[in-house]
Length: 569
Image (cartoon, rainbow, N blue to C red):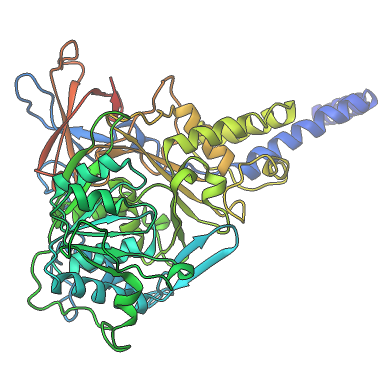
């Protein structure tokens, strides 16, 4: 018998012996092994972004000054190139190769009315503006009607001699219309935080020098303001439909006739139907006036008044649009909900960015709903949500309590593993169907939410979010989360985490990612926090076109981590 025949005989005997010993345990082991390989192959995906992009998220300047660190910029705005100053608005008829204007708030509304200008399936598509009342009452507003309100309200205030307009109302269409009216008619907009003590309202009016107030009955102490603030010249009431039959033009006794009282609906209703349909022309338009916001610190500490120019807002809005990857950018298919006050510059900038992107915007009177996402999203299904850190902490605590069973904990571990080890957002699967019933109730259609934006407010008492908590919330909600650092004198944000950064670290407060394309950050020595050759640490300073005054000290200590992301020291 040849060698080849011996080999075949040995092989045949080996196979025979192998199957002779086969039993149920062998079947279970082989089935499990094949199932494991099949699962790994079928679920394997490339990371959402290349891991190397997360290793070095910003770069420092080659030279630093004594007592301070290098100047850090995000990779999207390298040293030697200018920071992002505006929206690059192209006027009709301009060459496609010509550099566009930086733009301002007026260009935001013009873009919202014009619709998508880029070639593609969405060309000409416009976003909607919705008002949400209660759980079922959702009203859609015509963009042309809002344009009419902008023109008539702005023209009325201008005719009456107003120049500084205080807006004291909750999130609403009227707030946006009043803001754009100030932009188009060269009025200074003063957005006051809503639901403030009477003495704080009077103090903010005094500091801002407002001569006109737009507000709602029941929330504004007219008698007290008229008595203690004689510079008030105009008052415009925003009255709901059920109360419009009453006389709202009455002036409190003792104030004389110095205050001109009118109502929003009368100004609009008494004008001809064709009036105010067209926006003022681009030609010859002046630089719009400033926007004044109040930064609220901890309770008992007076708020800080900050004046932002049109350039500050244009730069901040552009940097937020640039921070979202092209494949994930906001558009007509998105419904954007600011579940935080528009008096907050971070929320306001993001809302204006959504309007510029032709996304639909839903507005409700946030109030106490800012701390309850289930209540804030009642009646609608947002795809993009601006939430307070307090609301996210509450959502995390409530949802984590649902994951007490062994199955739920293991499913959560699998989804977290996809995020932290593979760098991939978990997708819907057969296993996750059990997980869906435990998710937080955000919106009327679970699973539609795709992006949550939130910010730590420097110097305030907002709760800080750890990277572990952010990772859990991504798994719970199925949405990506961007965590930003906001400050009083910075429109929008100082820095924020990258869109695809899902990493988890041992920390009490997550890092804040790299600076945006409109800011640069450096540190100055502060007590025990000093910059050395090995680490950049000290008081955080920020400068750039989105910063009021060009540069601001944040008053808190921070440092640059090994991956060049900004964090508290």
